[in-house]
Structures are given as C-alpha cells and as structure tokens.
Amino acid sequence: MSECIIYGINTVRQILNKSPGRLLRVYLQKGMGAERFGRLGEELRNQAVVVEKRSAAELQSLTGTAKHQGVAAAVIRSAPMDEGAALDYLANIANPLILILDSIEDPRNYGACLRTAEGAGADLVVSGRSRGVDITPVVTKVASGAAETQPIARVANLARFLKALQDMNICIIGADEGGSATVFEGDLSGPLAVVMGAEGQGLRRLTRERCDALVRLPMHGGVESLNVSVAAGICLYEAVRQRG
Image 1 (cartoon, one colour):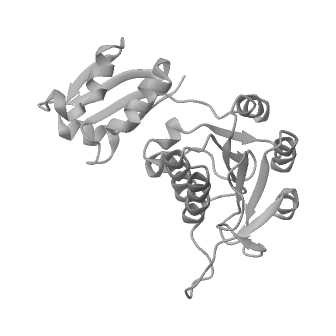
Image 2 (tube, rainbow, N blue to C red):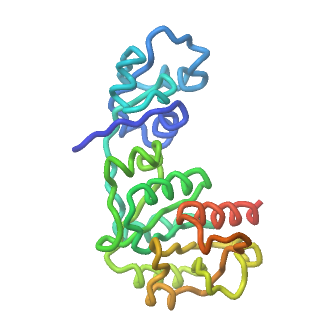
C-alpha cells in the first residue's frame, strides 16, 4: 500500500465524501478558525479520521506549494482500472462522459487533462498502458488533486477498448483537424467518449478508424493547434453545455 499527499479544501472533501476509506490523515493549519474550513470541518467531525494540526510552513513543505488552503491529507493511492474493470464501471453509468488520451507523453499535459476532466465531471479518463505517461509526481502536482479523485483506466489495447465502448452504444468522437464538422456542430449530448491525440502527432491511424466521427476546433488565429489539455477542455465543456 502506498500513500500520497493531496491538498486543498475541495480536493480533501471529495475524497472524504467519495472514498473515505482511502483517507489516512488530515492536516489542518494551526490558528485557522472553523469558519475557514466550512463544511469540511463538519464532515470531519462525522468521520473517524485522524486530524493533525500543522503550521503553514509545515503544510507548504508537506505539499510543495503555498497554495494548500490550510488543508492537506495523506491518502491511499488508488490503482488505475484495467479494461475489464473500466467496462464494468461504465456499465452502471446512464450517460457516461469519457476522455480518451491516445499516446499523451508529456506528464504536464496528462496532469492538466486530468484536472480538466475532473472539473468537467468526466466519468473516466482512459489511456493506453504501453503508450502514454503513467501517474508521476509531476502529473500529481499539475493535476492539483485530480490524479487522486478522477477515475482513471489504463488499458492494454486502446483500439479494442474503443470497440467495446461502441458495443455499449457509446459514441466515439475524435478531435482531429481533418474533422468535417466543428466540435460545436457535433452532437455530444448522449453517451460519449472524446478522443484526443498525442502532442504534435494527433490520433493514430487505428484510433482514428475506430471513431464514429471526427470534429475539429475552429482556429482563427495564426497558430495551427491548441495544447491538448486546452483542446480537451473545450470538447468536454461543450459536451457539458449540451447536456444542460
């Protein structure tokens, strides 16, 4: 069993409410009143969780940042789901929203994608086991807690996994500059997996062939493309908008 540190009031609340069994210890900043922590303080009182008081400097040393909001926690690190577990998990979600990352290699981009997906309420983020970065300290730091709260899967064969999603009537939409329609013109309201390609290379051929449709982001300036986490955010939040 390995543990890691998360921080921030909302991040710790999410673990407390969704996976309290993973919570080992909570660290609160000394000298801060109960009103600072709001509902987190009430929820901690209702849980059998070890709470320790630490100075602001100690929390900064523990988290590696001064932006800890006076709260940190030690949690059991969760392992990513494999293909079977991911499909079982999705079978119980009525209208899933999934982010698929095809060969993302930059840990900062991966961390930013996790943070974006978690913020948009994505049910799952999927990447290939042999292609793409794993959870690293850099990923965890950039994700700002999302690496511990966002459901993640790493699958052996991404194309096979996409086919399994299609068999579950989940629409596969690939983000590609060659898309015939813009992301704002596509129907993203139903069960959906948004697929983002690698930095500089885009979608691999097999991945592209598995997509039900390709959509593009309209580019009006001089740059040819956006950072993958920015592009993922646009696509996911357009899906959120269409879902009301």
